[in-house]
Length: 262
Image (tube, rainbow, N blue to C red; front, side, top):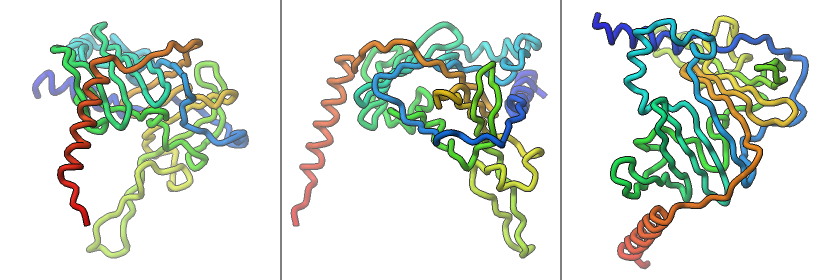
């Protein structure tokens, strides 16, 4: 096997390792439902780390570290976020110490090209710059609800309500000629025969006192949240405003051109 392929295989297997081992107390229930709505004029930072880094295993395999360093320019280490008046700004910081700013607004993703500086407008669901998670909501936590609640536990010294999704089980049909059916993505503990042996897809830790996210763990990476103490006003840069306006005008003209009156 090629050395790089072997390292990639080891990397992939590591991604599916067990997440933070906690023993939540299920007897205590949340005082109110979690809301993923982001308040107006909010700023926060998300630190992005890999599961093995959380376990203190980074640097134990020089070959793996060397392989991963090839992607330093596209590996996100943290995201500075801010939301106000229907616009979300994200400053992505990469492992090579470079950074990139983009905006989500009006159902679009807007940014200035890292090479040319030209305005770019994309569909947020199909961006070349990586996934986006909404505007005024923590989209990555949209699944968090009482259905997935498993109890109270401490996360890095903070008391948190814990929510967890498991990999769905494959249901074998009675008819031997029928295809196996899989339960909906993100099964809850009470939907599984044995949650202790099921693969964990995602775990969310929500601060018990503030009901704000503390950590979001998946099989691929860990997000650690920290709210900024202050908020600084921001807006779309002029070139991006002009590009968005021109595109809106072009769309309006196109609709008018092909409008067929009854």
